[in-house]
Length: 211
Image 1 (cartoon, rainbow, N blue to C red):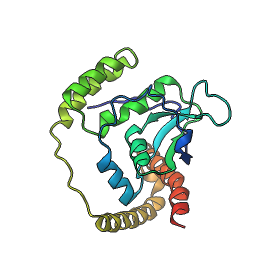
Image 2: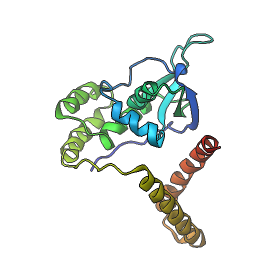
Image 3: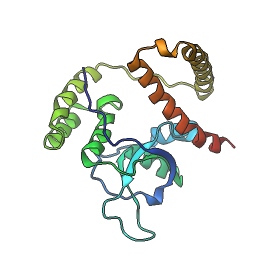
Image 4: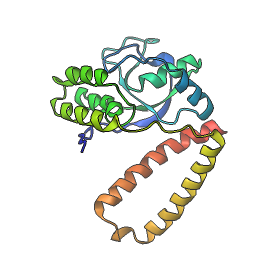
């Protein structure tokens, strides 16, 4: 089982940030972005479905200079630039220590995008001195993830229909949960609240984009 320490200072607000405000700093870029054409097509059709992670750029300059350091989401930023977009949906962390930033940067290779054996081995060597506890997790994740098949593409109309149904189902379940809230396990309640907090943050952003 992959165990990852939750960042102790990883809370942040969702904002639409000008791409020009992002630095070209590559401290947390774990591999080259590669071909982002398919990702750009997906974002162009569906929008940016998950935020990038940013923090104030250490030693940022004066007015007009880049303000933010990208911690995670380098491919999404490249895809948005390919689409000639001006803004990126970002989770802004006003205070994020280096160790917590590395935890966020490692979330993608641990849980999301498939990486080759060579890429994983290079990454393990890089983080060995930064987060030694994460190295075994990276090795185990690659072994498990290499067996996962590629998910088939979902037509955009079908995705919208499924999402609307899922939201409706969640609303129904939340109505039941409110009535029995005190009977739910404490750990389960905390997980539910955390997910609802994210929805509360992202709703104003997507609502503004819908107007």
